[in-house]
Image (cartoon, rainbow, N blue to C red):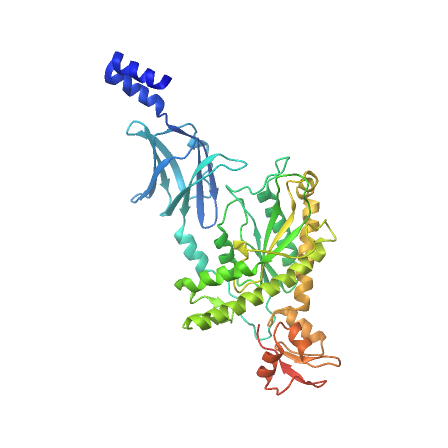
Length: 453
């Protein structure tokens, strides 16, 4: 009511100019109150802190390369010159008023980029934000060209590839503990330690999805695992709850509900039809009819989940020697990062960062190393018992079992075909078919061939 009376007074006493000034007060611009740069290998993220949601438009210009960000009814309340632009494609950031109340921000670029923009709601650490991603398509092509491949060497002694994913990163801090410890920092440190431990072990190679403080979208993390031809994908996290009491480590594998929805997504997207199922040397969905493709995908999903549960149980057993476990068994959920249909995938919650004692532990490099050692020991234990065919561990296991070569197994006293099938992640019927056997009886000294997983 007071606003209406004041506007009426403006109209009767001062005419149009007074009303225009009053409207300007009512429609005060949103401020750009801060800015951050997050360079990553294939993109750079520019984040603008705003007092609220903003109406914006982003477009590119060439000769020279520039990116223009127009913000409607916005004031600049930060200094772009204070940003560190090293490692980014940005040479300089300029800004100026436009159309009286609007703000134009211009990024002078070193090379052409593909822009993408969106807004984020407030979280524990930041308020409203406008995010502008500068995607380096040239860098993406270089990464694809340099994509590592796993080849079956003549002696069948390739490394087991483990891809380690440090959750969150960049603008996404993850959970934040009572003392301000950020999940993204803890899990990156732990992932680097785990990578070092794995790379020191003959027969293993570890790759990281991110090596610094930047964000990778969830589907991008699983895509990196596929590019590295991973035998196992492990995503590291630190849990949080609204109260400080919960504590303990957890291990998650994909749920059947998550597998079902992912199978439907894969079959519905034509670009997935040529992707391999079963990793290097697996079968392709390309050219298959819908029913057969669905069967192959379901078989692959089931095998991946079973392997995930096996290695997850092995890791959980080792973690129990270092910390309290939140649950006694491997849990299952529909996390996006677990949805690779052909790669066993796990999410490890190292503890509750919202618990004051566990926050102190998780911030300690010595404790991080204990957890990383436990995860590695669990991985090593599992793959020592069930190594993928064609790997150094499979060759070593065959040698210990009486001179078997990769892809073959010599029957020893006490062996059964079902036991051999279980050890080699296959089925009795598949072993019988592959070896031309009429029944499941085997003799000591008999050599049978093992089909590739």
